[in-house]
Image 1 (tube, rainbow, N blue to C red):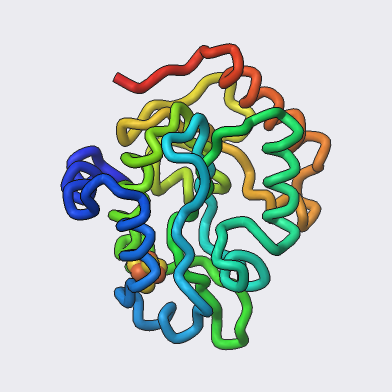
Image 2: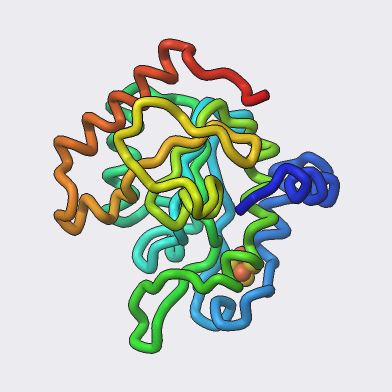
Length: 208
Ligand code: SF4
């Protein structure tokens, strides 16, 4: 879980520049297993400051790992970006809990380990500090746990944001979950519309 103190510690290291931060991420070799299998490390990208930040799990094998941009180049990214466009969000920052593609022994996407998530935690904190989003959409249970903590249940479809880690958080399914058919695109579109209505109505501000 990202704590405000960690964010403030990290931000000093990166001299408040998203370019410096992204360069540090691209050069990062903290996770030996991921350095071996990744094509590249993939920093967050988008508007800084941003109205809304989206936090996924990790760059996809056929998406960010190849293109160098989170949620770009695969079906999950296509769906996410279509939803963002369709609900009229223009100032967004998109990133992941970890910035390198985790693969299993057979080369398939896997969930990042606890130590890999911990290694990358400071980068997420620094990105949020720099992007200063009014709302952070956590795409999937792992992103939610990382920012909201395990004690808060992951409940997509909630009516109001949750405040934790100094951020306003909004739980939503990962687009890959929809691509796999576990949740309907119609329902996903409804969830996006609800979230965007709150953003557009100005019902959220900077957390205290
Ligand atoms: S996942 Fe994060 S901490 Fe690990 S090597 Fe990649 S950028 Fe570094």
